[in-house]
Length: 285
Length: 142
Ligand SMILES: Nc1ncnc2c1ncn2[C@@H]1O[C@H](COP(=O)(O)OP(=O)(O)OP(=O)(O)O)[C@@H](O)[C@H]1O
Ligand SMILES: [Mg+2]
Image (cartoon, rainbow over all chains, first blue to last red; front, side):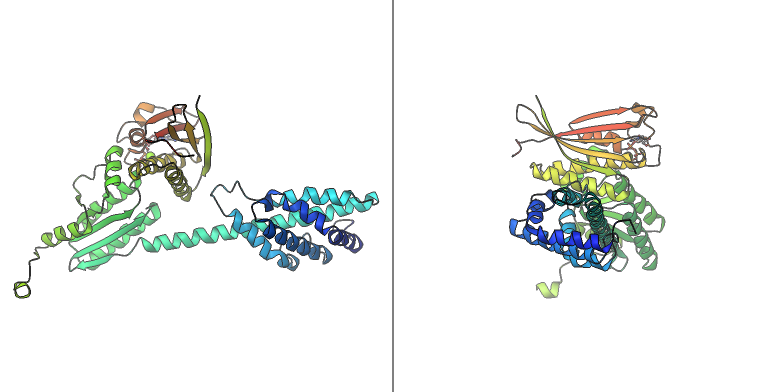
């Protein structure tokens, strides 16, 4: 324990926080941490935060981010963290260290002996540093969870291999195909080609937002691998804006057959396996 | 006089950062009214250059700028900077099909074709900066 954080100092600081509540809250409400909130919400959050921190100081938990004391301010922390979960750069994160300035100023304005002022400074600084660490922890765990959830979701989305007919498979590719997802899509398609003795595999890219060189390379590699396993590949669903961009990028799909839509590709696939679709004469009769 | 506004800066270290760059670029392109074709070109070029920054440049940064000229035209500029090994033979790197890493070798030259303006500054051991500009076809709002 740091010298000077005896219980009497804590009580002194807690008392100060209680007596100067409205001044502190008013000062805090004008900091960037709270100005993005509606005034009523800001006032409420300031009050909650202050009460919580006072409780932490009273119970001596001001140096421990995991201590139960901070639990009382969790809802406010969650609100702060949620607001900061915006852009990827995170540069607009409300930084709670700005709360320290006004707090210490008000504390020092009191007419107190020097050693008490110093000890109190320390307690107040510690509690705000702890608050900051707790906030960072919440943000980090929230960010990681989101990324993991999204990654799992996208990986799953990219892998369904659909059997359209005996010997005809289709794989609808969705979103952005980074290397992991492209790899998984290729692997599951090749597996199914073997398992189902498929003769045609349709790669449908209607749901792909951009085809860059990496995606194009995946498509080409998949087509070559499929051919080695005895299946012909058809790429369908190349939308106009993507076709135009691919041409300018210089991508040549070479010998890989392409069709505008999945339906066109299916028609072609049926021809490859020697089937024709014709009107049912009895029904049309 | 041209006024320049930096809209966003994105660090490029991990694979997921390339997705962040694409998303940020698309957002800005939409906000200034780029057509779907223009958005797709922009996002594709951004994807290529971001991946080069990560793979060949060993990580760096993307900056998205909006430039407003006196005649009212707006240019969306992407600047990719890294402190990697640099490029010794620029002409070779810009040749269609040349890749030192088993790629298609179309990223850099393709990005140059997709953009309205292209600028490459590099030297061995001094990193690489690639800048591409896309002009808005109609006056931007705001
Ligand atoms: N930022 C960079 N730093 C160093 N070298 C680079 C950088 N960008 C490109 N290069 C060099 O230029 C070459 C061509 O780049 P380009 O993007 O056209 O092809 P690639 O990245 O190898 O493959 P892909 O077609 O998938 O993009 C690269 O192989 C690399 O040697
Ligand atoms: Mg490249």
